[in-house]
Image (cartoon, rainbow, N blue to C red; front, side, top):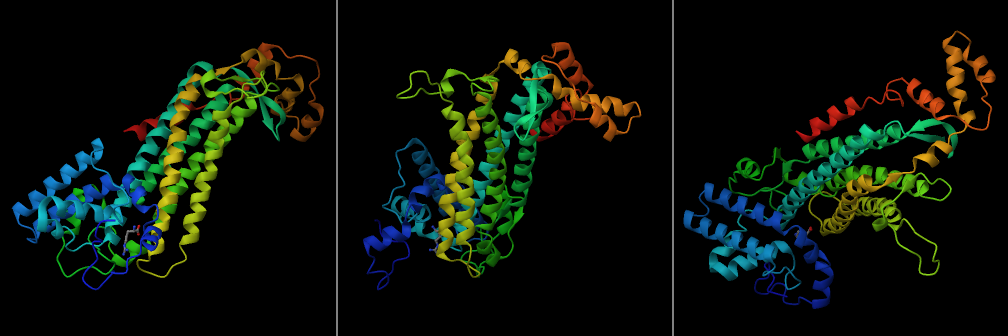
Amino acid sequence: MKDLIWKKDGKGERADPAIMAFLAGEDVLLDRDLLLFDLEASAAHVKGLRRIGILNTEESSRLLDGLQLIESEFRDGTRELDNHFEDGHSAIESWLTEMLGEVGGKIHTGRSRNDQVAVALRLYMKDRLKRLQAICTQIASVLLRRVKTEADIPMAGYTHLQSAMPSSVGLWLAGHAEAFIDNAELAALTTHWLDASPLGTASGFGVNLNLPRKAVAKDLGFARLVVNPQYVQNSRGKVELQALSVLSACTLDLRRLAWDMSLFTTQEFGFVKLPAKYCTGSSIMPNKNNPDTIELLRAVHAVVQGAQSEIASVLSLPSGYQRDLQATKAPLMRAFSKALQALGLLPGLLTGFEWQTERMCESISPEMLATDRALEMASKGIPFREAYKAAAVEGEKISAEKIAQSLASRVSPGGCGQLETGLLQSRLSALKN
Ligand code: ARG
């Protein structure tokens, strides 16, 4: 471990490797994913210090060049953030000092690792929510594109997993598309909600320097400030939970979609054929072709839920910075990394699978027309309850024309005959702009 930045004579001399390893935990490794945001915020802080005359032009440009060099070396892998350091925040100062001498020690004027980590995390969440929003709109686009050509393919509709009414591929696709449009909107709203800069609040009490907080926030692309220094710390974990709640909405929908697909690929349903690359064989049963990818996609929601509950459990704290807050970082990052990876596979999967249309038509039996029949009678003036009793439809088979008629007659807005994809499409376009 390098010298600790906070170590001064007579303090910290008993630094014990086992205790230091416990305190830093996996922190320094997680900070690899935060480092670029930390460097960005550090550069904005340097410019802020220059504005108020704490740094002169020469000092600030040396520091900015140093930060730039660290960034490019970190990106190309020649500079590594490893457990020689307590965390990414102190690594930056330590690298600058190594590179530039005394001036490196000036970068921390007026900031604390407490606001440093908070700003890096807000930038991280904004970035990940932006990626999430893009993936959700991509998923919805793929689904709506398929609606254009496949809307009228018949598919049995189920409630209680029991045959209910004739339904369509269009209804299924558009239903999942609407879910991901909602999720993309949630991501946008949440980004707006957390788009506030904590930088310049230092350890949680403000500082006796007139830091240009607003200008620094603007420089970093934040819409506003988290004004109160105490609230910067108290909002840690709370903001993470909100970001995770968007992620959780996405993986909940992912789980339901994966559930559908896993049912549809069974021999019993036989509605869907998956491209071979999403499946694996069995080590013992030569006949097997298993939809493992879909099952692991279904399992991702558990990771997000676990992260939410881990963070919520940490947040039993008094006001101000407590080191416990560090423990909110790993679950946040673990969940985003797993879920974005999983959701990123969906556009390909949703483009690639094929419907087994013949089998899907066979899954529709005549008695599934009973509701249509009852409503038809009711529309001619028979009280619905009477029509309900008289509506049984018998027979062995149902013709393709009859199914098509049933689907086309479902004209209530959103129904199989009136999917209203135009409404979904315009919400989607608004999200892309
Ligand atoms: N790794 C720490 C965290 O995530 C950084 C802040 C450390 N601050 C402190 N006062 N020790 O909370």
